[in-house]
Length: 124
Image (cartoon, rainbow, N blue to C red; front, top):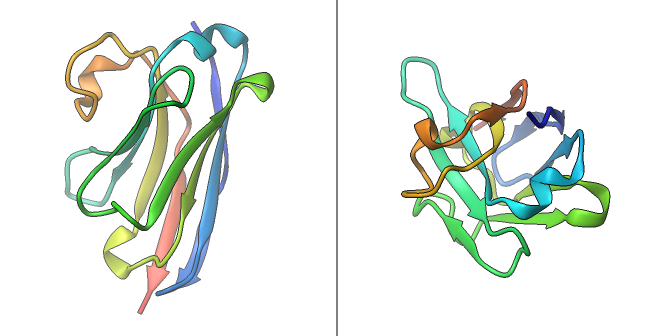
């Protein structure tokens, strides 16, 4: 099973930007759909963005559309999430996910590999 290690995150003021990275342990991830999720305290884990194996198709939650960009570099086995114009409501622990089993991409139960999580805090 692929191992995922996350980098990036931190604290920023509203309107700022952050970039998250997710490095996979091997290239098996390159043939699979991957996603970013986030989870705020007391809330369910929600799908933020998803990307096809080639990067040709991307999907976003309405709450981040136009502000976040998901991308991947298959040569480097790495997934990215560029977050611009951040808002306080974006504050959460962010997770990358792999091993998608098909179906509705924002469903966290359809993934079998997860990164360790990265905290993103946006102050007003």
